[in-house]
Structures are given as C-alpha cells and as structure tokens.
Length: 228
Ligand code: SAM
Image (cartoon, rainbow, N blue to C red; front, side, top):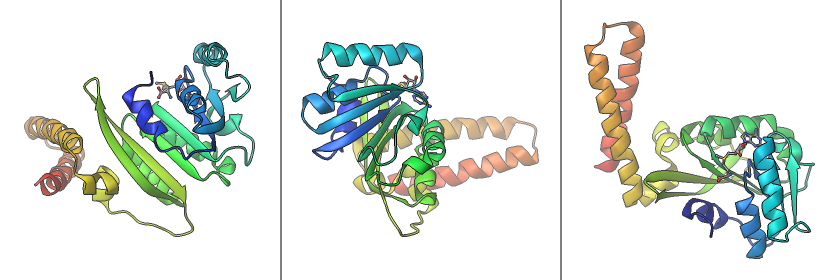
C-alpha cells in the first residue's frame, strides 16, 4: 500500500512512461508504478548505501528486477541521455531538488515531465523551473499524518514564462484551487510569520532585522489577500 503522498505523485505519471525515481529509498514508487502497469519500466536512483540496498531488496521481493533497474549514484548522474520520459523526485527539500536538477541539467533534454514533491520551500523549485524553461502544468496539495505536501508537475517549454512573487510563493494552480488544505497550510505559515514578526519587534533594531520584517510583512499581506 503506497502512502497517500506517493500515490499523488504516481497519479501524474502518464501510462506507458519510462520513469526515473531519484532518491528512491525503498523504491516503493517505481515498484507501484510498474506493478500497476503505469510505467513500462523504471530506474530507481539512490546515493546512500542503506536505502540503495533497501531498493534492491524491495524490487527483488516484488519480482520486478526485469523492469526496475536500481542504480547507485547522486541525482541524475545515474541516468544516460534520453533514457527516461518522466523523472520523479519526492521527499526532499526544494533547494536539494533544485540542486539535483541543476547538477543534472545535461541529462534533462528528452525528459517530458518532472514530478516533484518538495517537503519545504516549493518556491525555490518554482524559481528553478521557470528559470530553466520548464512550465508548471499542474500542482497538488494534500495532507497526510498531520503534514501538508505539495506536488509540482512541469513540462519543457520554449517560452520564457514569468510568475509573480505570489504565484512563486503559493503556486499558480494551488492558488486557483484554493482548497481547504491549501488554506490550512497558509494559515499555519501566516501564524508562524506573525509570531516571528512579534519577536523581531522586540529585538534591537538593525538593518538586517528591518529587511526581515519587511519581507515578513509582504508575505503576510499576500496571504491575507489570497485567503480573504
Ligand atoms: N523518494 C522517497 C519518498 O518520497 O518517500 C524517499 C524520500 S527520502 C526522505 C530521501 C532519499 O533521497 C533518501 O533515501 C536519500 O538517501 C536520497 N537522496 C538524497 N540526496 C540524493 C541525491 N543527491 N541523489 C540520490 N538520492 C539522494
């Protein structure tokens, strides 16, 4: 049984794709995709020995060695050019996912879709995507075990697409969707920012603190406007 979070990632994989799951840990996602015949075949990439062994074990246990290649290495370096249609990267911070994409840039031509699930800082990922000719084509947000997760789906584009700061922070599709989980996420962030702002108000004034306060006030205003 796949977690709700990984099932949501899986739901964006087009049928018949060849998928690379980077940072695959137990390889639950590629095993599920191949078992359900969504993916024709898959590569599970893992940089750490323990999780790499877990992935090998899981693939063997499911009898899927013929369809899933488990490879040890960092990021996209485990891939050859034009090997996969879809790359999934889930369960890491936005900055780390962006770094993996940046370092593996030369392997991205030919990839038709990225499905990314940043645990924090989706904004840094939206920034990387828009700066590198990837267009967001869908987003999702869900809650599982008291945590809220965002999923970003992107496809290559020739156009230079610009997002506003509000769209980069909140997500253009998630903003439009305005779901209960989306509202909950930003209400929680809002409360947190207000707490920090109160603390900064009591701190010794300095240019750095003033800059931080201005940034928080801007984000608070944005969220107030969007949540209404
Ligand atoms: N993707 C799975 C999920 O969403 O449930 C596992 C997430 S786990 C928190 C993150 C995994 O990414 C770890 O197993 C870690 O070893 C791996 N990882 C971190 N940096 C990596 C990199 N540069 N290349 C490949 N794997 C990496």
